Image (cartoon, rainbow, N blue to C red; front, top):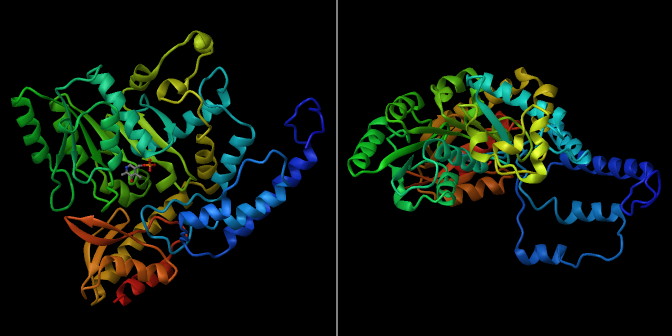
Length: 460
Ligand SMILES: *Cc1c(COP(=O)(O)O)cnc(C)c1O
């Protein structure tokens, strides 16, 4: 592929070839993304090995052949969350402008760690973080950072909480979560050195929320045993049911006792862009740390999570280190995003967010989120009307759980939906298996929802 102005570069690609390979790739993508394929196609490990296993080649292979193989052997074997019938887990579906953002960030290989090397890039990240603060009602002095997702965000936030409140790990620190908290919080706690007996998993109430009374009693009990109530990790939209903990009351309780309130809004946070979503999450703006996921409810491609610390300097205080080869970093002013988390080399995640929001405009994004909330309402209505189905939870922030009223197992209902060319997933709510619908996909509509409910009701 050598040629062009970089003749001495063994990895050079000449401009003509760059264009040709680029156009070919774009053509393949546009064609593929228009094609209607089932929302999920699975394969056995043996089949995938058969299709893909082989040594790294010594010699160059033609790019067109590599692309064709990718289209045949890799791309079909994945969930297509952007399918209108995809109502499982949490549908991720980042439309085209965000994908182009990743392409640009990647093609220009933009580094997003220090102001010294990335003034333009860092300012875009500051801009999108500024938007988010405004949407949430977070103070302008709050500081944030884009991370890989909600899991990385929860880990970053809890590390920040521990550094700000306690410093080194101690045996007396207790972290409180409800039994509906996301699993990434338990993992973050483990990585930070909390042993299982330092994580209090409290029973949620009948609406799957962490009741302030339950939390207060647990804190009292721990305090009387000489332990320190350190932090509460609350949910703004649980993955199971979309439930929102009473954040305003939890904030009061935490702040009376000097404990930290972390809010995991990875699922629900961006629904605050809608009136109904905002009203469902009072107190979101009171969090000491907050996590959001732009690749869920902000329609960005994987992966972009956000972590915020309310007191601006807390992230930097937790993460800044200065080895000798980075001493010059502080001479140029501006934010060094590498100081706000664990990544030194970090990609330009903010670009896909910036392009998505600017290309569609907030009104369109709000309308899409509102439509998801409407679809979840409709799902609850259709389930309630169906003599063969029973509503178990919701709708709450776009999530609905249901069971069969005709003795059909959840697995059989899910299988019937998949056979009908759509997708829902199953979970366990209050000890009972349920089928779960999450209506966040921006291509989902009334028709695709109705066919899912019909297929679930028809299962036997
Ligand atoms: C998805 C999710 C997470 C984890 O986020 P990732 O982006 O998958 O790492 C954490 N909390 C909640 C509530 C979630 O829905």
